[in-house]
Image (cartoon, rainbow, N blue to C red; front, side):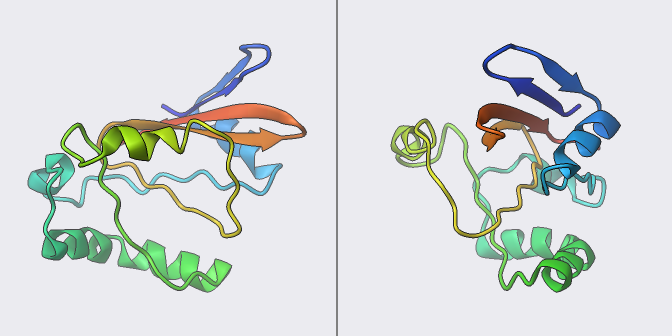
Length: 133
């Protein structure tokens, strides 16, 4: 279940509809595509071949094409992070400091979870997400 945590106060917003409503006020979309169409192997394998990565992308082709059309996105790719990822500590270190993106980012969680801090009205808000079936 998604959750938003305000770093300065610890206040939380929980639940799909409440999170969607809050984020939409700031131009951030929260959606759930589900992982039910993926074979079990692709849900838990952290050493995906290029063909397996493409299989995941193809499974969500309709949603990806819709996003591309609506937002003008051009490409998609897959990033797999696990304890087996080479240089994981170095990769994760860059996310611990504030950084900015010039392009939109779309995150789709197949297994595990993530926390994505964003600055909203000058305050850091953590968006907690995980896989949902």
